[in-house]
Length: 252
Length: 249
Image 1: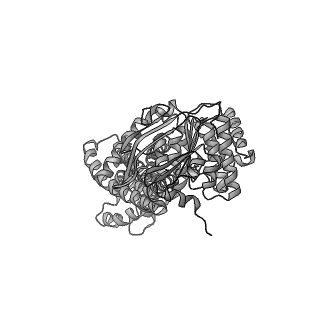
Image 2: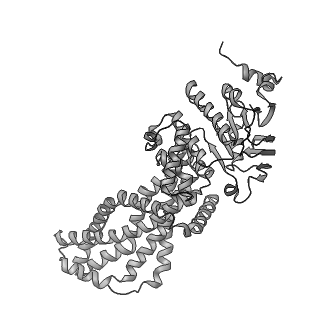
Image 3: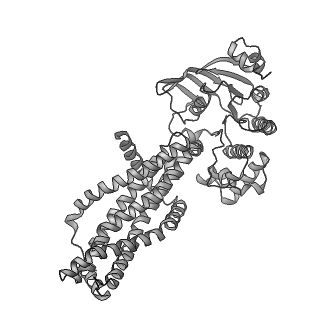
């Protein structure tokens, strides 16, 4: 475990050192961004719509019973942007994109493609890891913004159409506007950026460390997803704690 | 077979090379000198450490002990890849499956930004022609190629580097005898045309005796026989003789 962690830190450091080359690798970053968007946008939309909806459904009746129905918009919005969107989108990306990255790099390792790159004097960090980590770090915060909007919409739809809640569109969004500040959204974006780097580095590391043929690829994919999930949840707590003092931002 | 006069090859010198995996010794103090421009074939039974030896020569493995000098420089020297042009043709070809044949062949030039896209295209087609592949193959993906074609593309990719040292890992494995013959002839032609030092590891007796200037026989991590094909044929080592004379009937 400690060896794994050490290798992860080294890969992260190597990726940071490679950052000045990112402009040279922009085409690969763009290709990766396209792949990530293509593979996850619809799923992100669907997931966020239902997360917002279920949040409304769970807390709406309780708030309405206590005469606090007008606070539903703010509650759904804050839950989405500070916690649910960054965590759920990260889990989605780890499962869908991180696993694909680990499988692709694992397969390249097993079939000697990475060795071939080295013999061509090409650094796999520049060629493979940097574009993937940069692309996922751009894509995930963008998906979180998107997820916030769709999640709020889902919450508002359920609040409007569920008989036990029946909070109007205007009441929902008026409260949302009063409660949500720029800092709350930034909070979620910072988290998602850190989670994205984690998913990228963990997945690339597992892919590059693959040994033992097709079974090894399977093992790497499983490890990439499980390790990403564990690190996302641990870091979620740490980041939430660290970001607490910065909770007061600007009202939107 | 004499080394070519127009050689651009470089000598390779290996001293006391040792490597173990999980406490299991694979290479046990291997010494070898390969002359510039020579074709050297390393033969040996499966698991004798041939591929591990080859991977050390291009820096894909780090030895536990010993030193490897390529063109007089230690293989571990910083930036050696920028000073000495080396290429390796892998057993599986090692082609990048996400790239087309043309992209694979031109990868070294495009990634190092050594030529313009038009020049790269011209060089790619030229190198594909050397290995008897046409422009119609350039747009294919590795998954659409046969085993022999993959190896030829890998050779074309290696040629783009204009290597001073070229390594082949089992170049004729999984190929029918006719394709194996073509690959063997291509290795000979390449050596004659670019004069690169050529080192191959193989099980294929016909290939080794057909094209190599010298042959080494590797057994349990040590070279137990070394010489010209004629010398190896009459070498007294019993396992080598069994290896050379093994027939079904």
